[in-house]
Amino acid sequence: MPHITIDHSSQLTGALDRETLVKELHAAVIAQSGSVGVCKTFFRPAEAYVGEGERGPALFVHVDVGLLPGRSEALKARLAESVLKIVGRHLRLPKDTSAAVVRSVEVRDLAESYRLSPSARATEDLRAAG
Image (tube, rainbow, N blue to C red):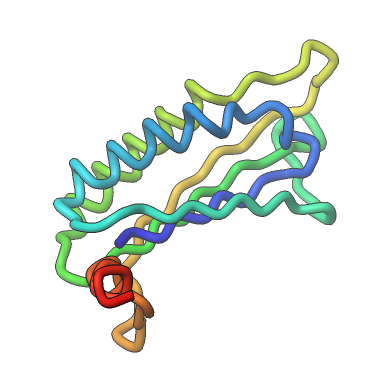
């Protein structure tokens, strides 16, 4: 059920190993959060971004993990640390990139208004009925 959004500087589009990143990220989020269902990940390159690091212009990767409510803040903090490490392993900067890369993660509760349709179970029921 987790929803994951990865916002990043458009210059990093080719620097993220998306396939292996998503595979490792999904496994970690499911295992550490105790969630059921499947993760859904969206990549959103940002064309317009203004950011400065200590050494000048900076690129960024921000991961937002939305979970159904009920996890402790400590669990969400541990998961955020894990996600930071995973992103770092799957980010390969071009040799000509001198900009710093700022990585951040937020693990948050989905709003109580969150709904999913069709659910995985409903989809299976529809296939069986068809």
